[in-house]
Every structure is written in structure tokens, then in C-alpha cells.
Length: 260
Image (cartoon, rainbow, N blue to C red; front, top):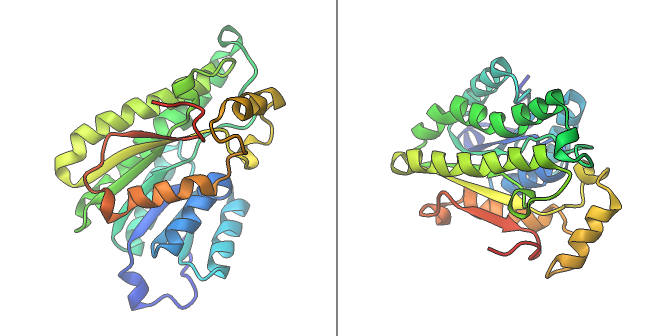
């Protein structure tokens, strides 16, 4: 369901729209908030109904133009419904593919991960950025100022984190997909880049073992814990006009934990 923001009128109908998947909490919510502050109409695409509505109301309470659309990014029919609801809101300028499974997925050596768990992570983390981008591409191509796609990867795929093989593989797939999409869409007016956050203090990492937090703390160039807002400025740049000649890149934001 898409709800009209209080006071939204003709002026709001002219706003640029961005879809942020998994925007009900954590990094997704932080990126949605920053986009709203920058003048975007924000579509909060979230699987959890209560979490999505809470995020919508929170952003609206801050004076931002936010619309919750329930979406299961692993389900093609649900993604098609997201595209239809987004089209109703006006021209789509940008997509942030943030939704991913990260809670409680670590701790097993690669040979101990069962097939069902591997496939579940791949469906959400690796397939959904392709699925959502494919569904929203016609709207992005139609935007007069060109379109932007930002995929959320992870520095785990750059570092090769142990006991996390399925997550690492899924985020490595996101990086490869980003490059392939950038090649195909460069001359069609859509840029595609990936952001690779480090271990960030938010709900999704609450169950990460202390030893992994220690690994980051001891090996970052900037040792303090990473916060969601450490990422939002870069994403804002990638969604904006000044990044129009930047595409196919993987940008790590992790306080210097990995350096490339």
C-alpha cells in the first residue's frame, strides 16, 4: 500500500523519486533519510509491514516525503507490484538496492553451510538487485536527467571474511553485477555503482560475534566504530548530478579496513 504524504501536492509531484529497498531500519533507513533531506521523494521498500510503516511515519514526522510499499525483493510478483506502485508516484530517478540477509548468517565454515541456507542468501542478496533493477529500469530510462542505481555490496567480499562464505559470495556477485550493468547502461543514461560498507553499528549487525568487531577495530585506519551516517554522504553523491560520469565502481567505506 502506498500512502500520500500529508500536504503533498503539485510541487511534490515534480520531485525526484528514489526507491530504497530494506529501508525499514539501519543503513537503509539512514540512506532513505538522507535522500529525503536532499529533496527526494522516498519509497521505503520493506518486507516487514510494521517496520516499513514505522519508517514512513518517522520520516514524515521529520518533514520528508516518504511512502512505504511492502516488498519481498526475492519474489518477482512482489517486485512487479513495487514497480507499479512506484510508477504512480511520478518520475523515478534512482534506486538503492540495499535489502539483504545479514542477521545471524556467520560462524560456519563453508563446508558446513547447508544448501537451503546458501540458496536463501543468494536469492535475497545476489538475485534481488538484478530483479528489482530489471523491474524499475523502464522508469529509470525515462527520467529526463538520467538514472542512478546504487548497489550495496560489502567489504567482506573484498577482504574474504572467513566463516561467512555464502554472504561473501553473494556480495561478490553484487560487485560483478554492478560492473556488468554499468557496461550495458552507460550510454542509456543510467549509472550503476556499488558501495561496500564495513561492519556498521546497526540492528543488522547486533548478532555479529565480538571477535569480528575486534577484527575491524584492530585493523581499521580509523579505529572508531562505523555508523550508518558514515555511508550516507557517499550515497547522496552517487545519487546526485555530480556523479554523472562515475559508473561501474566499487567504493569501500570502512575506515580503511580494506584499501584498494
